[in-house]
Image 1 (tube, one colour):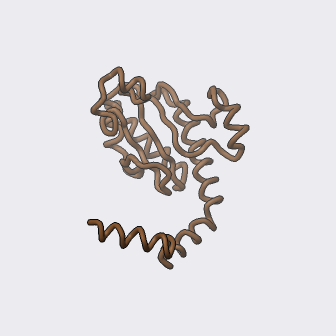
Image 2: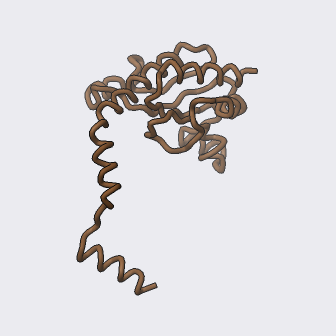
Length: 172
């Protein structure tokens, strides 16, 4: 074990950490289009948040890009080009509706990570926070009605259509 650690540490000390040429190429290529992708993320997230805010099957939306959000002023100061792509909302019907909704999406992916080019959805109370009791879930912002979205760069109308059909399935 000591030899393996020495090989890694001494190599890093003497040669420095370095990306492989392929990884360096992919990073550079990705950085070239980052501003375009981030603007699309933000624009899509705002469109989805506005749509959710008006939907009667949704109890609340927590997104700084909405004008009535308590953090809207901070968003305009620190992130004038958009409030990002990750936000939460409360689905009416609680735990069962949240699980049913996530299980009904077709375009969105059911994943816990954020920042992907694909739109992602998760119901924290039944996945990442399921081991917590109700008081701990409330303290962490993962109550039974919470659904978290990480909006990708797909067509916003397609994202909304998928959420619409998933909310309909959750209400049945």
